[in-house]
Length: 422
Image (cartoon, rainbow, N blue to C red):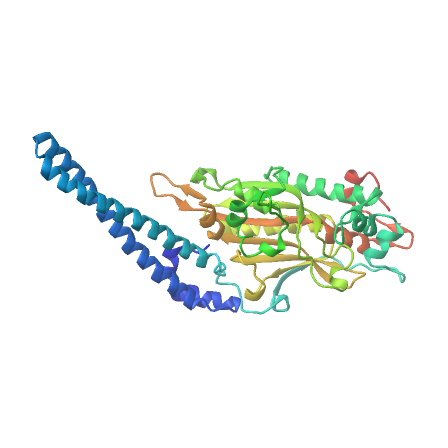
């Protein structure tokens, strides 16, 4: 969430940059600043009461020692009032701080200065394209027909076991899925990321820490009895490893990678956009997460984009990189690049990765700080990206590599699959 100090010092800048997201937060910021003034006044009153209380306590002790019992008892009665006042001010302070936090939870991150205005993904800026568009046979099929033809994924069985959006991978489909996971993990560890296997359920504090709560409350599967949430991405548990942690500047950069199943209740609308593997309630993803020094986080964002581009190059998939406009930017992000792979049989671009710099937005919620020498602890920057989300990658591999007599497996995956054709 935004820092109150930043709102205080850069209110007009924050208002103007958030207009890029098509929202006006003027009233909310004014309310935050008004409450912050009230917080300071309440804090001062409480501090003064406590200071006077300490002074009187010493004076009362001296009076008792010198035998002035009556005068000491008179002052003792005054301390009772001061204690009650201090206790009330402490409660008032807590209520004000909660009110400030409640408002801040509703305000998204301030977009980086290079983020352009726009209302939807139609206004995103394509900044890079790579790869050769495949030439498909005349009878080319979309992946939902290919997986039936070769018995790779069973959606009907998933419906029987669980419900729509929970596919069952079978045979070479399961083997190809596992090959992609291992390939992505190996590439990340070779790039210096430490692998983590995190829990698939997180508590409420973790959800608030990375910004999924309260913004995406309705999109997460929730176990009400234990108040735990199934993760929408490995970003949540991995980043929360560092909640309430003070790092040393020399610790940067911290690089973690994790494979997890991911769960999202809101799988989208009807139609081809959600057909087959295009959008699911449960899907597999390998996620890369970095913690960075604020001065170096945007160089690291470029490095993470280059890493994902390298994966797509090795898979020999045609792809492009889109810089998200303000209207398509995620709630917690300051700058995001989406990777989109071209699905030849569907004749459309499919998003397969989002790589984002959150600057201090998550760190402020997480109380994730670092120390440089004897200086006061500062908020770190957090970044993450899909490297990669599997369903649409699998769909694109099947569609783009289909031939008249089967589906060719990308060469880089053959050592993982043990076969070069389906």
